[in-house]
Amino acid sequence: MRAIAISAFLIITLFSSTSVFGQTSESLALQPCELPVQNPGTAGPSSNITVYACSTYSYKAQDGTTVVLGNIQNQNNFPIYNVKIGIQYLNANDNIIEYKTGTTLLQVVPAQGTAPFSISSTKADPSITQVSANIAGFNSASPRDPLLQVTPTILQVSDKISLTGTITNTGTIPSTHNRIYLIAFDAFQRIVGISNSTTTDIAKGVTANFDISGTPSPRAKTYSVVAESDEYQSQPTAITNVLISLPVTISNTQVTDPNGTAYSTIPVGSQVKITSNLDYVAGNTQSYVYYVQVKQFGGQVVFIGNYQGVFLGPADAPSVTWTPDSDGSYYIETYVWDSHQVPLSSAGTRINVVLVK
Image 1 (tube, helix red, strand yellow):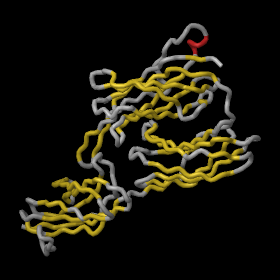
Image 2: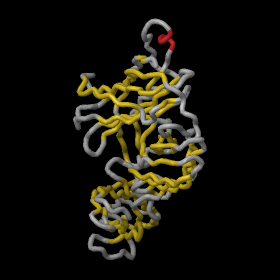
Image 3: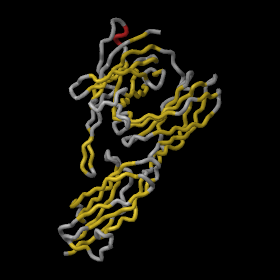
Image 4: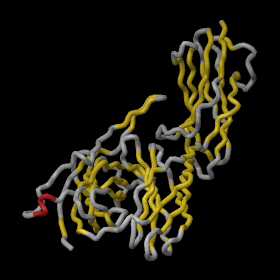
């Protein structure tokens, strides 16, 4: 085995979001695999060896730590293992708050292949606003034949993520310590979430069932699954059967006066109370924002209001008050998002109203 140390740096800004109702924007900093930052490395043949950290994505976890996800691309025509990734966690002034090393989730990165990584900061430091990823070293390895066959059945995404399927050992020896990884990608093909199964052993020629559960990323657009054991690997497999269900349902939207009495006609200048019933199917406590948007029939927005609440049980009934200032025909739209502008529900049923002088 030959040990090789190179350094390919990538600095990105942490995800940030600014929004108005119905619109979001992201500050993105991508390092595509095909455009790496190269380092001359050591003298001799190793100067032509290329391994890169690319398409890195970072976010703040619920415990305040900073999680860095990404891909390692092995552009050599031999497999590698023991890949070390160094992460610098920096503040807005480029000062290093913490340095931490980790490895790829796959032990062996195939020739001309990729492997995901996930590394979290030790410190829950709010001053961390950007990260730097570098390849600190790796070793050449013997190949692992792609003799594990992973067949996903259905991926269900709601407040939790759940994947079921089968894995078959098509090799000639037992496959030990099999682990299956579910990888979520955003629209820019960055890894934004990783979940994994528990390890298991599979005899030669045997097919076993598996299930994976975890926390979904609201930015995930596509998914794939890959497996590895001490003896074999699988080819990455795209998941095409995805069932997405949101945890909140909006129903029975009512338009009343402030006391809850239904209007026979709605006069201009009178307060209008808009209330919806929200059903919450998840069991955990969840903060939410109930939005009401009023539009003229031509499509012009005339009012946006919101109510911030917390689901402490299976239902809630938030209200927003609107005072119209002109007559005409309008329609009311309702939405429920979380505090990060991620939808928790589909849009509620549109309500048509007519205001009179």
